[in-house]
Length: 258
Image 1 (cartoon, helix red, strand yellow):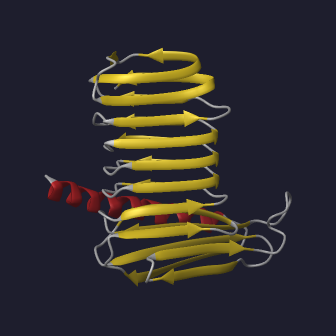
Image 2: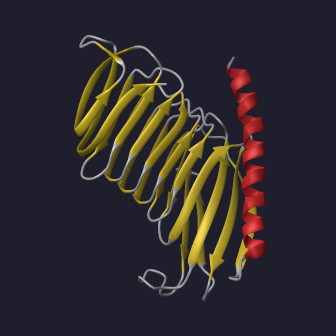
């Protein structure tokens, strides 16, 4: 069964990467600003990898790829000065650092200066990824994920490993999740998680403004919910082995079945 999932994941990766690449090229063909697309491969045989998108407007998508390598596809867009790029790979710590900065791009009306990365990793890799001001996405991965953004949306889909997400400002959107455990917390923004298989422990918290919407398969759950308006549509029992904690003190909390 695991081999079947890996095969299906590889096929989905080819399709997703092809669609993403075509979409990037189509958008660039119509763009009036300078653009640049590159691709490179890094040998990799580790069990876990850390990707840090630090300075600049850098978005990151992580997908499953081939064993033995990290494949990095980069798309740059700028309106004045070409971005200064940093792509540092530290093999000892298995850390990839990505930066893209332009003079004045950190100002409210600064020039366009953006880097979009698609990085493929071996499907069972344990991933830790962080962005500062760009979107962070991951899909079709089997390893555990630890994702952090300062200000940016997080989108995940078809994950099998445990999920941990933190963002200061931004939405967290998860589809077709098979994760047994999920721990998601945002400062301001909405959290929406849709599980394909019944999780054993889910924590979804909005600290200030935003809503929480959880969709889980039918089962018995120990639910703790806190919100200005709460709707619980699953079977509940205080001694249930499956735990759900959903909190949005000033928002709407919904926990329901698929």
